[in-house]
Amino acid sequence: IINSSNSFQDFKDFVEVIKNNIINNYSDNELLKKYGFENILIIASLVEKEAKNNDDKSLISSVIFNRLNNNMKLQIDATVISAITQGMYKFDRDLNYNDLKFKNILNTYIIDGIPPEMISYVGKKTIEIILENNKSNFLFYFYNIIEKKHIFSKNYKEHKKKLYEYRKEIK
Image (cartoon, rainbow, N blue to C red; front, top):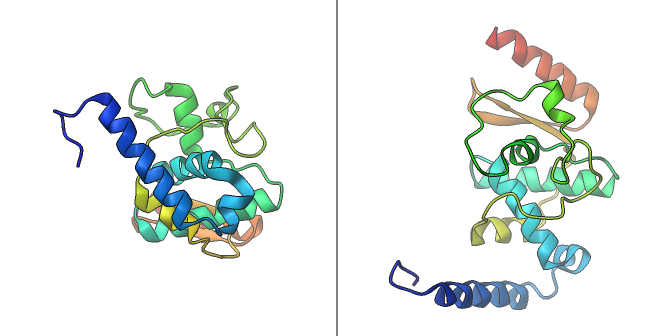
């Protein structure tokens, strides 16, 4: 157990043990083999920032892998927020269209594939959920503040329809 009386080296050693345990426990995992541990951590950071609970984490990670497999941009709002704030302050407004065009290596609306670095810390549970490699047919999602859950869609037409209905509700 790590606490405030431990040194930074103690913390680094603790994290290294966790990393090695995950790599050893999931040595045959197809995602770990395909993407490598560092990219799995980056993906886990995206999921950590986007998801509201473990079920969300499972479905959102499936969307990310589906998009990667289809050579689609990830288009994750949390990467835009991270790019804009650089982790220095809380983003306290809705994203707008110009934000989505913000030029930065983290912005998955403009870059292809996985960002080059993590956008947040990740929990061990999030990594484990991702490595479970949940399958879905979903390619899109948005958060419905009325229902307090993410809404998932299999294609863009379905996504636009659900988003249109949602936007009518919140007006």
